[in-house]
Structure formats: structure tokens, C-alpha cells
Length: 411
Image 1 (cartoon, rainbow, N blue to C red):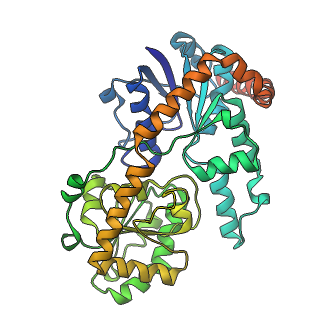
Image 2: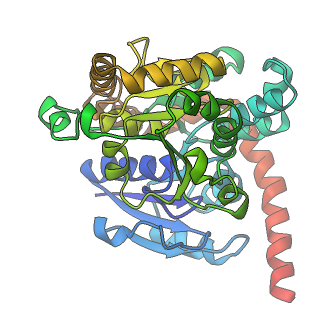
Image 3: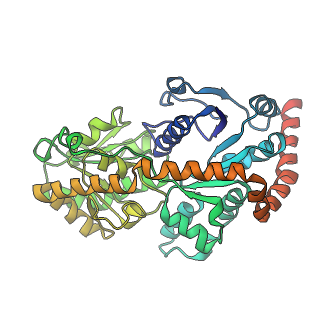
């Protein structure tokens, strides 16, 4: 078996975040291909954290800026290391390079953080995203992390194109890996409640994630009043982990705007809802909520940002609208027209089976990893920028971390 160490940003929460689902999909892929996985994380576990023992994955708590991590990785001696987001590579990458120089370093970006932030800043300033927004300090950090790794997993074709065309990153360092899903068959689809047996609209998303919180506010103030005016009996059920007081304050039963909180059973939530609303104004990557909607046969209405890189130009499982008035009108149309709804549902099945079939991407990912492993010296020799950045990172980050380590020891 091949030894794989995964260093998590957080403990996976597949029922709370798309990132958690993504991590479990990657774990399943690696286990299926004869990798023994050890998962470590410096964050605290929550009640929503997935029990990795179910997958026979050994796990350890680790500390930031602590020499105990060096001792642990020397003992594990991994052949492969997966960093969960660039922030983790920044923190632990130099320690891996120092103690396990032969280990293949893989980065999973989840989404491009700098792209999401650039869009958020542009949105808040009511301007279009420009190169000035994209070429930020955050971009420098995230792209430096990509260069320092042997391979980076990119979830979105849009982001692949951005990295290759705008930032001139060699395709040898990148691998497109969207969500890795099972195909949906019509028998499964027909086992779900149909149009007549479903009620209400839903919106879902972790409230810690700024695009989700903004989307809920947009629904409350702009879109939902337009829908409710035409459909006075309809309700909008808002689901998501980490409901704060400011989120709860939006709850208004009279307006049909219902804050439900964490969805304990995602399948039940989606299969009983008629339409999913996701008026995202900024963001990046692929949207887990829209994938869930397709998987559970729930048509959706979203924006161009929401649908970006998700459907490969196939007909959407509902509508894509940026204008709030049109968004509301299309939501009403989808909610009230059974034929339209049924066609939208089938579109979702086609998108999942065409764009996210895991058989299509798992083989390519395994081949890329094996090729890099076999030719690691040549692969790294070609990536001079990565070697240069790693050299300077070890010189700077290493000694900053050691200073913090010593400070913590003394005080």
C-alpha cells in the first residue's frame, strides 16, 4: 500500500460544507486505489465532524508551530502528502519538504480563494472584476503555494483556464478534478417525490461562508418579496450550518421566510422541496448546493456566478438569471409549471452523469499522480519557480515558525 498523509484545514463535515463532501470523495478515491490514509488536523473537532474511523482512517490532532509535527511525519514517512487548501501548505509545506523531501506534495484548492475574494471586493465596490482585483496579495500567496507543490487539484474548468492563461502556470502542475459522483439512474430519480408532492422553496449553505450569507440577505430584501407577492402561500426555507443571531433575526413566519438552520438530513430537505434558490453574487469553485439539488431531483434558479463551470453548456436544471426581477419571475414559473419542472429535473440528471461521473476523472488523476511519482526529479527540475519559492519559504516561514515555537515553549 502507498502511504498518504492528509493535512486538513478542518475536520471534514460532509453534511455541512461542500468542502467536506469533496474531501470524502478524495479519500474514497485514494482508498480505492490502494492508498493507506492518515488524516491530521490542528483545528478542533465539532459535533458535525465526520467519524473517520468508519472509513478505517487513522487520525491525529496536531499543533501549529510545534516540533511534535516533525516527529510525527518522520514516523509516518508518507510517500504522498495532500494539503487541504493553500493555507495548510503555507503552514506545513516547509516541514514536509524538510523532513520528507521525497514525498509527493499535492494541493487541493477547494476553490481559488483569491478569485472568490476578488469578486467579493468588486461586488462591494459595485465594479466589474479586473486584473487589479485578481493580482492581489492573496493571489500571490495562493499561486506561490501551487508552484511549491508537485500537483494541484482544481475543481473548476474556469479556474483551470484562469491559472493557465492569466497566471501562466504549466498544465503539468494542475489536474482538473470536479466533484466525483456516481451516475444517477431514472429509477432512483422516480423514487423521489414528484412535482405534486413537493412544496416550498429552499436555500441552503453554511453561514460561515460569506457568499452564502450574502445570498440569503439578497433573497430576504430583494427576491423573496417579489416571489411572495405572486405566491402568497409559498414559503422559503433557509438551511445551513452555523446559524448566528444575525441570521436568526431574518426569520419571519408572516413573510414565509423561515430560518431552519442545519439540515440534519440533506436528502429529505431536497427531495421534499420544489425549487432551490441560489442567487449568488460572488464566489468561486463549484457549488455543492446546486450539485445536491441535481442529485435529489430538485430544479434550481441561480446566477451566472452560481452556475459557472458547472454544466459544460448543457441546459441548466432550471434557470440562470442575474437580474433580480427575472430571477423571481423564473422562480415562479418553475414552481408553477409541472412540464417545465420535469424537464429541468431531467436536465440535472444529464449534467451530473455527463460532467461529474467519477469514472471519467479518477483514472486520469491516478495516472497523473503515478507519472509524477515515477519522474519526480525531472518534474521538479522543470518547475524552477516552485523550487525557488520553496527555498525562500523555508528560509523565511521556517524561522518565523521556529521563533513562535520557541516563544510558546518559554511562555
